[in-house]
Length: 116
Length: 111
Image (cartoon, rainbow over the protein chains, first blue to last red):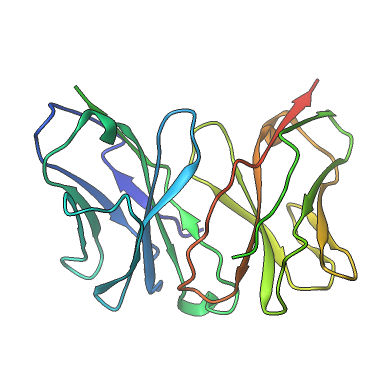
């Protein structure tokens, strides 16, 4: 069964450092998303991406965050200068393609980011 | 998206049916009911969705009331691996629509 894969599974970084989280969505999907979950809290929407541009973003997704799809297969989330409060699990998701009418999102297993 | 209300937590004996309720009284005509679950800290997993008819797949059944103001997710024979947080979400269909997660129902399956 096709799946969304994310790397790294866990990253530890120092405050102020740049971090790039990578995702490989399901190959025929057209819509891509990043979510985050701070320990013990809800899963929060960050950004959605379609046709090589951001289609929607939340208040959390400020200028420190950026996304891109550099090569047609990877979908990346960059945090330019990490803060302690960026420590969370980050989930990538994709949807669309032949399942356009169902709208289900397929999630990866997440990348745990720890900022020291 | 319409708001949903779910119990904070539920217990279910292993092998029994787990019935998870959800209220969505402000649902509009073009909105579907989706269910996802999150096992421990894994990525959320899609379970099932429906518009107004009852739906069944290999994971679960979804019963939607005739007025569409509430629904029930049924796991027919709960196992320990079904212990998870279950999210009821109302949203329009379409691949571009984001999913907004609430706090869900923490289901504990007891041996």
